Length: 71
Image (cartoon, rainbow, N blue to C red; front, side, top):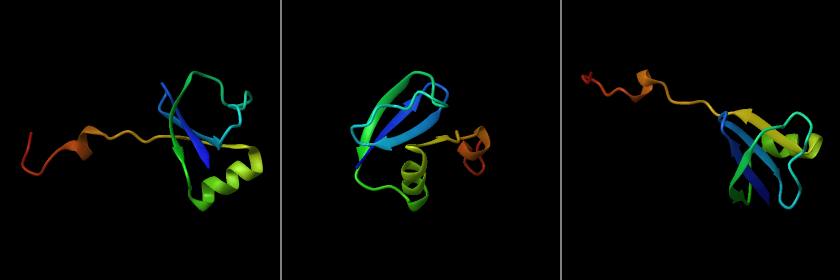
C-alpha cells in the first residue's frame, strides 16, 4: 500500500504506507489525499529504489477545456 500526497505547486508524491515524507528533494507543504492499494510499475520501482516517487501534475489548459464550436 502507498500514501499519496499533493502540494500547492501541483506536485504528486507517493510513499510506502506508514513511512514519513522524505526530507531531501521533497520540501514543502504536503496534504495527504488518499491511500493507494496498487500503483504503476514505474512508480513502484521508483519507491523501491529511492523511497518515494514525485512528479508534476499536468494542469488542463484552456485549449483542452474548450468544446467544439464554443468560445
